[in-house]
Structures are given as structure tokens and as C-alpha cells.
Image (cartoon, rainbow, N blue to C red; front, top):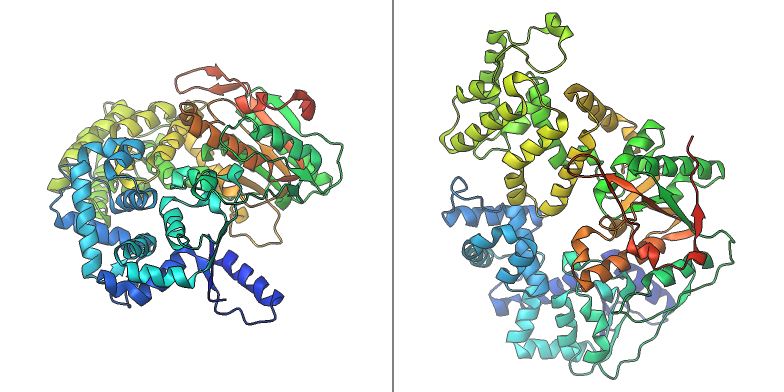
Length: 616
């Protein structure tokens, strides 16, 4: 057994496989090496790390430790966050990780993923060099080092590489379609001499290029190993034949693939997957909610129903509709839309101008500025609060007739803020904050919520988000969507009440719920990979939403979107609903007409049933 190496993506998968082997074999299989790429790298580095100048007791840092260490080296490099908007530790960790896993040069990676940091290329490179040195001094490795340092050691120390090449006579890799460049290189290096390598994967489910996975690994495998045999597993035990027909048709248009034709082992259901055209997002949400209740009456467990979408914000109307109808739901992608940090950050500005006594909103808002932490925020709040009371600007009960804000005529948030004492390093942004509050609430009267959101994002929050969030682009899409959503409210209090009500509905149905409790699953397609449900709804199937607008430029990106669509379809066992709204609110005002997703056009009409929704 010691001559066998098994590589998987999760420790759980490795344990399951090793247990199965142990049960099947009469001999002891304990010598077999099995685990994730990282755990195997760790084992090898503990034995031979000294070759690279690490002692065997090195620390493995988690993301939090890594962030702290990066922030330390950035500070020691003399980079002044007052002077330049430099990415925070979190974001740098993400950038460095991409460089390692994709083996791309830093400059190329920035150009592709973080173009707004290109001007800082040299400083980021310097921070990375310092970070590498610091890790060595502190005898620490981050998660990516477990792969990178192992590969480096094999490349620099032929004797060590030779030992492991001889030992691992048989190498097996699971979920090969999700491997990145450095993982494939490690496998190729170990298998170089004997070439006894077996990889298992489904190229049609390669959907993680944005995380650094390299689709070419599996696609080019027969080129790298010309004597390889390809076995296709085409029996499907999950879905009814009607759903598999649609899945086969959905992926057919991809040029880069190993062609397969899935056949069902299950009996036919005579119920074809449904194609549902709707007026707009809220009608789509009503349709899903209504159908979910009907399925519930037909004894389908809510836990066995999923609604899948391309991007987190696509579920916004649905979350509202399910909350209104008291249908419990859980979001596999974690946090409910309105409870995400970036949404709460931006709405804190609005809460504050609507109610200048809102201490929580004030603190959240000012702590977004450089140089203001908990202590400073507390002092600023005391200064602000005593000012509000002294000005008698908000006299409580007598003011009840007036709905919004402070409303003393000629009142100015900005002037009041500028009169306060702030730390020197926060001066510049504090002035910006004062101007922004004057802009969103001129004379103390709040503008319509949608306009306020746009102003706050453009004036302050966009810059903050770029340096603080590795997934800035997705968060920016959420905020644009929040502004669109807010257009239906003219009054700030109505808008804030709605948010509060949504956030507090049935919070027990949060992801931490117990198994007894039923809830519909809302999930992005990425997060649903590997799961299965009795019924699946795929929503927002329009061009620009799914496939996403970012993917329409290149063939590779579009093919990955098509694989994502294929993954969505194949989550369903018995029933599948493909929904698309004709209209959606645009970033400006009014609505835009939407084309049905090009992926729907590729499915022959006779495989789907057109559902007509009757409007009451």
C-alpha cells in the first residue's frame, strides 16, 4: 500500500475512500498515502523542510494569521495608507494566493483580476518579497506554501524528488477538473517516470476558473499522456430521463469537451422540465413561491427543493416574497442579502441621516474612514450626541408630524461634522464624509433612498471596497442592485422599515437550523455543486444574468457559464423549472427588456414544456 498515493479535494473524501479500501481488502491498508494535496504537501515538508531552510515544527498560518503578517510587512515597508489606497491584508493574501496557484506573473494577474491596483504593482511586489522573507524568519507557512514549497523542493532537490517518485508507483487523483496549475505540476512531476496515473473528473463540471482552477488540466490530459485510455461513465443514477435529455442538449454547444451522453437508470416520469416566461423579477418570485407551496401540498419536503441562481443578488426579490408568505428558507451561500457587511455599511449612512441619534449607524459609518477605530468612534459619537441635544434639533415627541431626518430649516450635517475634532490622519476623508452627507441630505432632508445609495457608493464606499474585499466586483454588483431595489421607495423611513422587516423575518431558518426544521434552499449554482434535490428552479435565465454579462466577451468564459448551467440542471432528480423574466429594472430609470438566455435557445423545444402563468 505504501506505493499508492491518493489525492482528493477534501479530507472527508479521502477518509471515505480509505475506509472503503480497508473494508474491501483482507490486508492492512494503513501504509497507503491518502489525503488532500495540502495534507500530503504538509507531510512531505515536515520530513524534508530543512532542505528549504524550514524546521520541521513550522507553523501553518490560517487566513487570519496570514492577513496579520501581511499587514505587519506592509507597515514595515513604510506604505502610508493615508497617502495611497493600498490593498488590505485580506486582499493581498488573495492576490498572492492566485499568483501561486495559477503560476501567473503578478503583473498579468493584476491586469486580469485587479486592474485598479496595476499602478501599485511595484509596491505590491515588494510587499510580497517581504512577506516571503518574514515567513522564513518566523518559520511559518501559509496554506499555499504547502503546495508551492513542496514543488519548489522537488525541483531544487532531485534526490528528494527521486525518493517520492520511487515510492509512489501508483497515483490516483479525484475531482481532477478542479485542479489548478500547481497541483497538476506536482502530479506530473511525481508521475514522470512510471506514468501510472489515474485521474477522475467531469470536464462538464469544471466551474471554478475564478478560483484558479485550470480547465486545460483535464482537457489536455490525453495530450500530456498520449498513451492514456479514456473511460466515459455515462450512466446516471440521480435524474429522470427527461431531465438528462435537457442536460445533454445544454452542454452540446461547448466545443472544448469530452463528448458524453448521459443515460438514466431511472424510469421515465412523463413530466417534462418546464420553461416559464414571466413579466419581471417579482412575478418570477411569486411563481416560485406559489409552486413551492403546491409541491409542499404534494408532500415534497421543503429541504428537497432548491432555487439556483448565477449571482447572489438574483435572489433578492425571492427572499422578500418567501418572507412575506412565511415560507422558511435557508441560504446556502451564507448570509441573507440585506445582512451582508457591504449592504449594512452603505445603509448605515442612510440610517444616520434618517435618525441622527442612531449611535450604531454613526459608529459603523465613521469606522469606514482611515484612522478611526472603536475608541475614536466612541469619542466622536459623544461629541456629536451632545451637539444634537444642545441644538435641540430633534425634540422627540413634538416633531412626530414630520417624517424625515432632522428637519430644522437650513440644517447641515456637513457643517456640524466639520466643526468636530478628528485625528489628523482622518481629516481628508472626514471632509469627504461631511460633503457626502450634505449631498444626500441637503438642508437635513434625506434624498430618495436610491439616489443616496448611489452617492455614498461613488463618493466613499467604492474606494473602501476595492482595498478591503477580495471579491470587490461581486459586492459592487450587489450595491448596484440595492440601488435598483430602493427605487420603489420614495421615503427613507419606508425603505429602512422594509429592510428591518426582511432581516427579522423568521431568522430561525438561518443555515444553523436543526434538521427537523424544513426550509427551501436558495443557493448560487457554484455552491450547489455536488448536491441534489427533488425539485430545482433555475431563475433569471436571461442574457446578461445567466450567462453573466462579464462572460459574454470570450469563448472560454461563455463555455464555463454553459458548464455552470449544466451543473444547475443536473442537481434535479424529478422536477426542473427554468424561469426567465422579460423585464428588469435598469441602473438608470425605467425597465429594460431582456432576451431569454442563449442557453435556453440551444435546447430543442420538444424537450421542454412551455408553462403559461395566469395572472390574477
